[in-house]
Image (cartoon, rainbow, N blue to C red; front, top):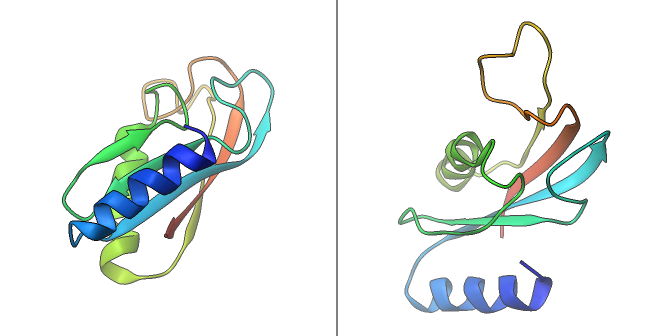
Length: 104
């Protein structure tokens, strides 16, 4: 989702009376499904648009986004893969991403 599309989506949701959180990939190391700058938007009503990982971690990012909308403060979440995390939320491609989740 490019910035123009993200802004249009944000404006539409705000016009509908919804709050919006944006999750943005702020760093990427190794093989990752989406580049730095990739966005995933979440509304206070549960609408979503875009992607930060091609589907690997969006459900967890959505939980963080909803918490940000309810509690206010931004959070940076890191996703990667290690032996201990092999069956948890992470990236199957072996890379690591850091995602900033904030009210937008």
